[in-house]
Length: 141
Image (cartoon, rainbow, N blue to C red; front, top):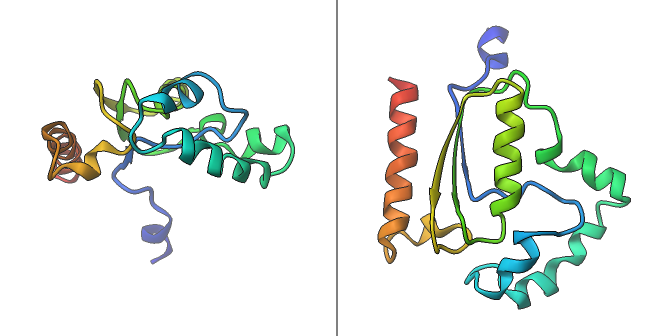
């Protein structure tokens, strides 16, 4: 019935999320110098897409990191301290926790953006995949 359709999922998993569409600052600008995925060429070639969201106010309103998290299910979040989305991911985690969401955060060092997708090549990627899978298993048990 409709109740089953409207019920929240048991949880959500976010892997190195890009969640702040406002003017790039902090790690999003600084870490492109060493992030293998979102490097300077990718940043400069794609940053204009943010402008397609319109005004600064609209970009703020559309950014998941700046929206309400009230009523969301528990979250597992994976990120690297040294990737471009680190600051905005931590912003999202802190805001979600402020809104009462149970957030489990896994942080790795010296990894690039979306490093878990490189799990066949990076032991840390495999660790992150295991972290997410273990979290899901506990939530679904």
